[in-house]
Amino acid sequence: MKTNNRDLEFYMNLNYKIILSPLSDVDGGGWFAEHPELPGCQSDGETPEEAIANLMEARSAWLSFAIERGKEIPLPKEYQVEEYSGKFTLRLPKSLHRKLSEVAKKEEVSLNQLVLSLISYALGCRTRIEHMEHHIGIIAIHAQEQESEGISEEVLQGLISSIDEQWSRANKSSNSFTR
Image 1 (cartoon, one colour):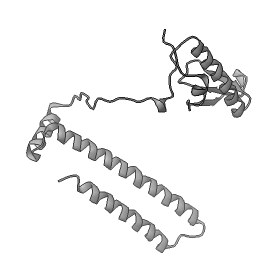
Image 2 (image 1 turned 45 degrees about the vertical axis):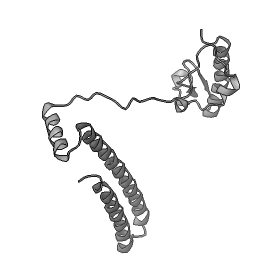
Image 3 (image 1 turned 90 degrees about the vertical axis):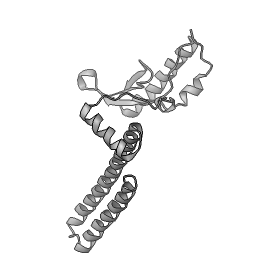
Image 4 (image 1 turned 90 degrees about the horizontal axis):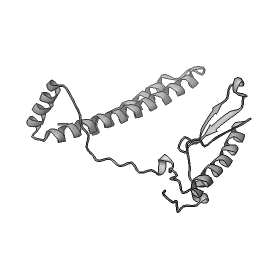
């Protein structure tokens, strides 16, 4: 049996995830709260606030019980260090393997370096696209707000120019990554 050298106060001060959900009338109504990282640590209440307050009491009891018995207490996910080896196995069609190998040979890099650079590039592109989608959403909201007042052509062109400029900067940085 593993003993725990941390005290109740230590665990009570950690930010365990809380899942809060409404209970149906069949289940008595109110709210259900739980800490998914502490199996069985749950409570309920008439309001979300009451459910969370009751959950804090349940958490104290859950932790006290575990500490008294020397049980392993999981840390919240945000405190857990996930370790990655930097390696993974990838299965792909032979035709794609051949094409990647040909490109790597032409670029005078290893297959591993080529695949790593392509993955990095794709993730960078994805991030830029998400960033642009965010800006387009903001512009759409702004345009809807201005619709009743009639958005001027000048303001709309300014917003579009801003997006074009950001897109150009993003493309310049991505083009420096490729040959």
